[in-house]
Amino acid sequence: MFVLIHLEQEGQQTVSRAGTTQRPAECHDLEQQLREVKRLLAKAEQQIRKQQEKVGEQKQQIREIQAQARQETNLAAECEELKAEVLELKGEIRELTRANREQVTKNEALQAEIMRLKLGTKAQKSNGMRIGANLRGLPAIS
Image 1: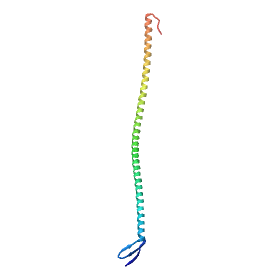
Image 2: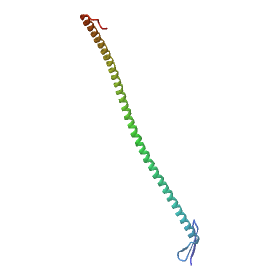
Image 3: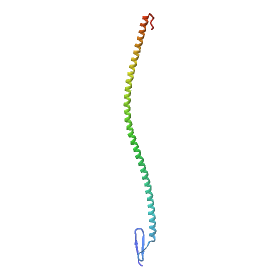
Image 4: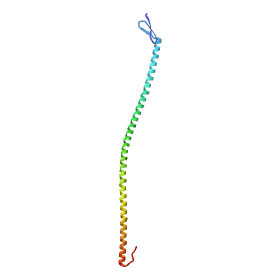
């Protein structure tokens, strides 16, 4: 029987008989290390899942923000179009107001002319009636 004693970093190992290894204390340590590694692996997998969920949520937020940015860009373009349309309408309003004032002035002039002509016609009728009445010898109507 050949017995070798060898010290390793983690524990003691005894080798006896043609290459058989006995590890009473080390076997327990390895099992414990294996359980610890499995526990750490499960914890790491859980952290990975949490991070993946966060990434998914952030991607959704990015999509929402991009959609909002597109909508704001569209609204800004529409706003610029409306500003241009408002400027056009203001110019049109100024032109219509000017044309309306011209029409009011013409209308007032025509109204004055109508009144002048009506007065002239009344005066002619009144003079004509006086002349006719004087010719017939009747008193004139004033």
